[in-house]
Image (cartoon, rainbow, N blue to C red; front, side, top):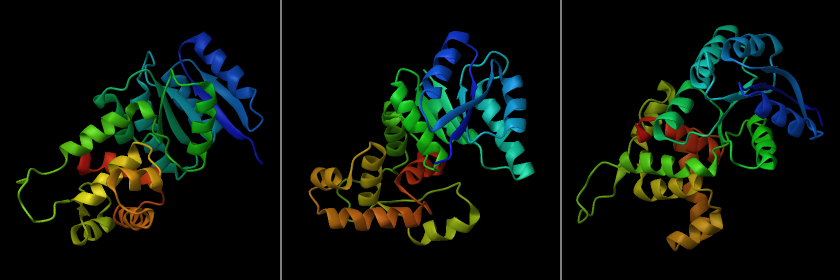
Length: 240
């Protein structure tokens, strides 16, 4: 198995040294560069082209969100899209979470989580699966609930939610097949980290029915997997 190349962009020297030592002890990971500020980090990202960049959100010269936005723009201009961005932070406020994903961050990781989980997050991010730290699940769920249009509780008409702000080629799919209220409930539980069995138990439906709903959700959100569906929902008008 090839090593995952990593660069660390973190202004606190002790934190950066600790991260490097912990990650280097993992046989599948290799730290190939470090930067103590965003200016250095952006140059390093463009030249080193790592598999994953671990970026602190609170950098002194430019925050990690703005760095991410600039680097993603650079990727779009050059066609170099292999590097993934994992935001490292203590901030789980709505503004920070939404801004990070809107800027193009691939994953969002809370600093107080264990180092073993960080290696798992890095591997998942490298594999193309966005990591959403459990600590921000409530933020995602709250914003998703705000996206539900108000309707009479006594109405027999099924509730649906249209997803805005996705790529134009997906808009027609969502206009024709909007998310139903049941699908939205299941999407919320997916974001909360529930398995199909747990979802079935909570909603009093069969696992087979859950699988059918999950498949429909992925199709409607044009997502490859459950995590991508949650991130896409967060970035879209559903959580605006």
